[in-house]
Image (cartoon, rainbow, N blue to C red; front, side, top):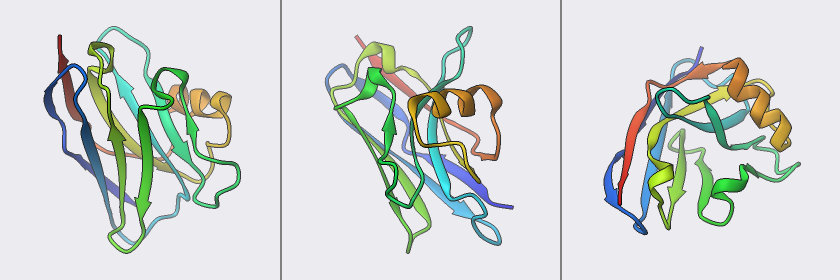
Length: 131
Protein backbone atom coordinates (compact mmCIF):
# COMPACT_ATOMS: atom_id res chain seq x y z
CA UNK A 1 0.00 0.00 0.00
CA UNK A 2 1.36 3.40 -0.95
CA UNK A 3 1.78 6.11 1.70
CA UNK A 4 1.56 9.74 0.58
CA UNK A 5 2.83 12.87 2.34
CA UNK A 6 2.12 16.41 1.09
CA UNK A 7 4.34 19.39 1.76
CA UNK A 8 4.88 22.93 0.51
CA UNK A 9 1.76 24.61 1.79
CA UNK A 10 1.83 28.06 3.31
CA UNK A 11 0.46 31.57 3.13
CA UNK A 12 0.90 33.73 0.03
CA UNK A 13 -0.59 36.91 -1.32
CA UNK A 14 -3.08 37.00 -4.15
CA UNK A 15 -1.38 36.64 -7.52
CA UNK A 16 1.66 34.80 -6.19
CA UNK A 17 2.81 31.24 -6.89
CA UNK A 18 3.33 28.12 -4.82
CA UNK A 19 4.31 24.53 -5.59
CA UNK A 20 3.09 21.57 -3.56
CA UNK A 21 4.90 18.23 -3.34
CA UNK A 22 3.61 14.75 -2.62
CA UNK A 23 6.14 12.06 -1.74
CA UNK A 24 5.24 8.40 -2.07
CA UNK A 25 6.63 5.64 0.13
CA UNK A 26 5.81 2.02 0.79
CA UNK A 27 6.15 -1.09 -1.31
CA UNK A 28 5.27 0.81 -4.25
CA UNK A 29 2.59 2.38 -6.21
CA UNK A 30 -0.30 0.20 -6.99
CA UNK A 31 -2.23 3.22 -8.19
CA UNK A 32 -1.17 4.61 -11.51
CA UNK A 33 -3.74 7.38 -11.48
CA UNK A 34 -2.58 10.36 -9.44
CA UNK A 35 -4.67 13.29 -8.30
CA UNK A 36 -4.75 16.54 -6.36
CA UNK A 37 -7.82 17.55 -4.37
CA UNK A 38 -8.76 20.37 -2.04
CA UNK A 39 -11.33 21.02 0.64
CA UNK A 40 -12.64 24.05 2.50
CA UNK A 41 -14.52 23.56 5.79
CA UNK A 42 -18.22 23.32 5.06
CA UNK A 43 -17.64 22.77 1.36
CA UNK A 44 -17.58 19.69 -0.81
CA UNK A 45 -14.20 18.15 -1.61
CA UNK A 46 -13.09 19.30 -5.05
CA UNK A 47 -10.97 17.50 -7.58
CA UNK A 48 -8.23 19.87 -8.76
CA UNK A 49 -6.25 17.77 -11.21
CA UNK A 50 -5.45 14.18 -12.09
CA UNK A 51 -3.37 12.18 -14.53
CA UNK A 52 -3.25 8.56 -15.64
CA UNK A 53 0.57 8.48 -16.07
CA UNK A 54 0.08 6.98 -19.51
CA UNK A 55 -0.43 10.27 -21.32
CA UNK A 56 -3.78 9.11 -22.62
CA UNK A 57 -6.07 10.84 -21.94
CA UNK A 58 -4.24 14.11 -21.15
CA UNK A 59 -4.06 15.56 -17.66
CA UNK A 60 -7.42 16.72 -16.33
CA UNK A 61 -7.93 20.06 -14.57
CA UNK A 62 -11.04 21.52 -13.04
CA UNK A 63 -12.20 24.68 -14.79
CA UNK A 64 -11.39 26.97 -11.88
CA UNK A 65 -7.64 26.20 -12.09
CA UNK A 66 -7.26 25.67 -15.83
CA UNK A 67 -4.30 27.67 -17.11
CA UNK A 68 -3.05 28.47 -13.61
CA UNK A 69 -2.17 25.08 -12.10
CA UNK A 70 0.06 22.37 -13.56
CA UNK A 71 0.48 18.81 -12.32
CA UNK A 72 3.66 16.78 -12.83
CA UNK A 73 5.35 13.59 -11.61
CA UNK A 74 9.01 12.72 -11.04
CA UNK A 75 9.27 8.94 -11.13
CA UNK A 76 12.88 8.82 -9.91
CA UNK A 77 11.97 10.75 -6.76
CA UNK A 78 8.58 9.07 -6.42
CA UNK A 79 7.13 12.54 -6.03
CA UNK A 80 4.25 14.38 -7.64
CA UNK A 81 3.84 18.14 -7.79
CA UNK A 82 1.16 20.76 -8.16
CA UNK A 83 2.50 24.06 -9.45
CA UNK A 84 0.09 26.88 -8.70
CA UNK A 85 0.27 30.41 -10.09
CA UNK A 86 -1.93 33.51 -10.12
CA UNK A 87 -3.37 32.35 -6.84
CA UNK A 88 -6.73 33.67 -5.72
CA UNK A 89 -8.41 33.81 -2.31
CA UNK A 90 -10.80 31.09 -3.53
CA UNK A 91 -7.80 28.76 -3.84
CA UNK A 92 -7.48 28.76 -0.05
CA UNK A 93 -8.02 25.19 1.13
CA UNK A 94 -6.40 22.06 2.48
CA UNK A 95 -4.79 20.30 -0.46
CA UNK A 96 -4.54 16.51 -0.65
CA UNK A 97 -2.76 14.20 -3.04
CA UNK A 98 -4.09 10.75 -3.83
CA UNK A 99 -3.25 7.63 -5.82
CA UNK A 100 -5.71 5.12 -7.12
CA UNK A 101 -5.91 2.28 -9.61
CA UNK A 102 -8.23 4.16 -11.87
CA UNK A 103 -10.34 7.24 -11.28
CA UNK A 104 -8.99 9.73 -13.80
CA UNK A 105 -9.62 10.44 -17.45
CA UNK A 106 -12.23 13.20 -17.60
CA UNK A 107 -13.65 16.01 -15.46
CA UNK A 108 -16.56 13.76 -14.55
CA UNK A 109 -14.27 10.95 -13.38
CA UNK A 110 -12.21 13.43 -11.35
CA UNK A 111 -15.39 14.67 -9.70
CA UNK A 112 -16.47 11.12 -8.87
CA UNK A 113 -13.04 10.34 -7.45
CA UNK A 114 -13.30 13.41 -5.21
CA UNK A 115 -16.68 12.24 -3.92
CA UNK A 116 -15.66 8.62 -3.38
CA UNK A 117 -12.21 9.27 -1.83
CA UNK A 118 -10.95 5.96 -3.21
CA UNK A 119 -7.32 4.91 -3.01
CA UNK A 120 -4.47 6.20 -0.88
CA UNK A 121 -4.53 9.79 0.41
CA UNK A 122 -2.05 12.10 2.09
CA UNK A 123 -2.68 14.02 5.29
CA UNK A 124 -3.16 17.35 3.55
CA UNK A 125 -1.30 20.65 3.51
CA UNK A 126 -2.85 24.07 4.10
CA UNK A 127 -2.69 26.73 1.41
CA UNK A 128 -3.86 30.21 2.35
CA UNK A 129 -4.10 33.04 -0.17
CA UNK A 130 -4.51 36.41 1.50
CA UNK A 131 -6.53 39.16 -0.13
